[in-house]
Image (tube, rainbow, N blue to C red; front, top):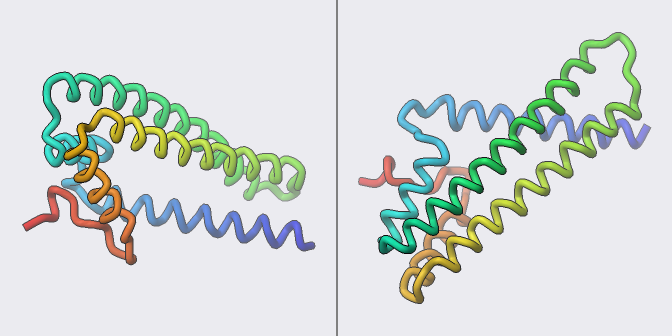
Length: 153
């Protein structure tokens, strides 16, 4: 019984995350997605040509990795929600899907950390200070999205 409760809570969290994603990204027609983040970083840090080339190479690799994770997560979530419609479910299969989703989400977070670390390593000392400030501001999430380039006045 307790195992099912945990699964239902995890399912609820996943549903809430998906709703947030849909509202946040589909509800913002002017949002350019990950490209907006990259453009913002480049403009704020004022990279030189060498840094810009390193950044673009790193971002291309990062986007490919994240796209692959997104595809894998979508597949797992599709299987999970298809199972929800079945008259009988195999809890081992459901548990396995939740474990797979959790591992992929963790790996995505690690990839994001290493992306930020690579950007930090590209920066000179002045840019590192500015980048640290940008990350601190982004982390002060209080229920509202931090102002991005399209939201600044």
